[in-house]
Image (cartoon, rainbow, N blue to C red; front, side):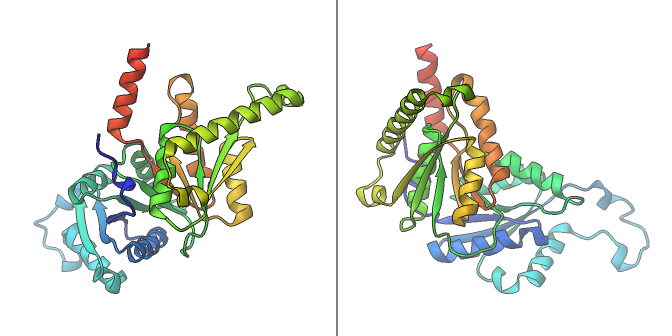
Length: 308
């Protein structure tokens, strides 16, 4: 089984998905900053959604400004007008179709190692569409997905949220390979099955000892190099993971959290999947989402089926 691209080091090709609106400005700046940091190829993609109205009245005798215009040509002109200098440093592509599908298609076509997207801040216009696109990419993206929220300056400390699962292991490996000099903080939030249990000091001690051992096993499975392991700080706290992530990022002014796309399998799979989604929403800074490699996912599913 071949290792995923993030095991090899920083992304060699970055795909920035932009709808040419102001809400993608931070994503554009972040993609440029990372492309320069990693000396990566940058491809900028804008997707034009199908619009049957362009065909209506194509033969009408209308002024030029009212005639149907080729959307790809319009998008290219907007790129040149808004991002003149940037376009010279990137490969600009325009596709027509559903945004999430087109982005996934382009990711495979150019063999992108990272997709960069922005988030909508307009409560009235565009929020549902962009939110839907990001949600679809989070569930089906063929490459790591960076969702940009923060203003752009270098990532100093990298937070990795973990539930000790295999996807969490991939998230830690990606954080290490993408940012080989930054401090790494591994945060594990645990919740007691019943709040009353926390009043029992022996239960608290036993539970925290078990979680600590789980974290040590998790780090051992990650096979980090000795210098990388020395950069890792571990935090094991009682509380909701998404709340702990938000509090830590705000307190420490951390601009990036890295998470795995899915959690443990079995009965808890759906709940932890929901936790990952809530981290996407709660995190006050950027979120790097790493999906478990398909080959590993299939291998693990087969092993679990045989075990059953």
